[in-house]
Image 1 (cartoon, rainbow, N blue to C red):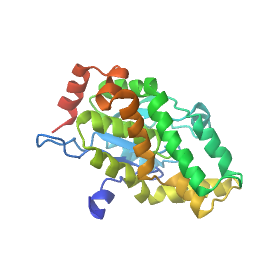
Image 2: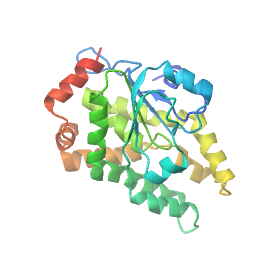
Image 3: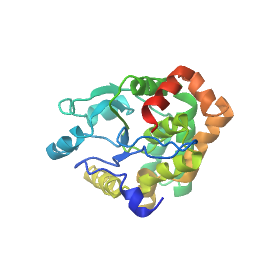
Length: 256
């Protein structure tokens, strides 16, 4: 993937974080995932009026918000706009509590925090199947555009987008390439730094990298859990109640 093609995936929604199209990747048989149907991002609470006007041109029918209850209360998404159906599907990895605690202490190194991130994505894959069942049901329930997001649009959202891509037949290498695009989301890095500074918690470069960026090892940990516990994407989809007919329906609608 070239730098220009990667940057073309990011959409200019003013006030959004890490907002991009995760369609367009090839699948076996010469087809590809449709563009302009699948979107991912971070929180939407700071989107401006002009940003919502641009958002409306995407014709998104459903928004899946994977944030915790406290995150939604602190940074609510406006209800009007957007005109999309909003589904709150909270995912609260227990390991993330330890990560948050490590941000304010000196007992944990950057390597420790990176390890926490691997465990968070592993836990997301292992312990939150019902939440991703709801995500797939929301995707199946709309013939318009689909948006999945969390706070930064990289961990809970990253795994959710990977599941959808794998279900559609996108290769693991392209799934990983899409996951790593978060590291090119300059608005995410500046946004997190500004927010933490406003709360009296300015971040050093190593900590900022942990919070605002991703590493290949993070998603690899989740995919390892996917393969070890569920036997791969098909086993995961079975556990999530996404039937063969539902998988076919997704491919019929989202592959071109």
